[in-house]
Image (cartoon, rainbow, N blue to C red; front, side):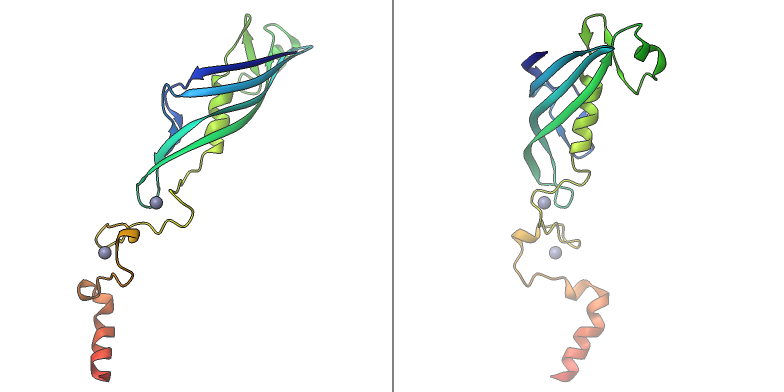
Length: 159
Ligand SMILES: [Zn+2]
Ligand SMILES: [Zn+2]
């Protein structure tokens, strides 16, 4: 068994549409490599910074992600190599392990498809596009919204 602690640069496109690890950012690998009969079992954690945009208000998000990886890399020409599909089990390429596919899968799974700057982000006013945080509590577009026209007339007759 060998442990590997290493910092590598993030590959490009490590993430999903709205959020991901910036290319070239430091990824910290903390891995164990165990020799098993058919290959090498790699397990451990990978962590790094993530940057993205809030799905509701488009504000920037600065966060971090830590994922757990466990992947078997079969020796070339082993039985596992011969009996499994390319995408089921990783393959050793000579003495080298290409961690990127496993890393990419784990990171993409860990990231939210609809990231938020904070859980209760109120988003933007659909009429004027201003963030609700920056608007007064009674902000509204009653005058220009036809759905409210009837209601305001009703209020007027009551007065
Ligand atoms: Zn937001
Ligand atoms: Zn508005």
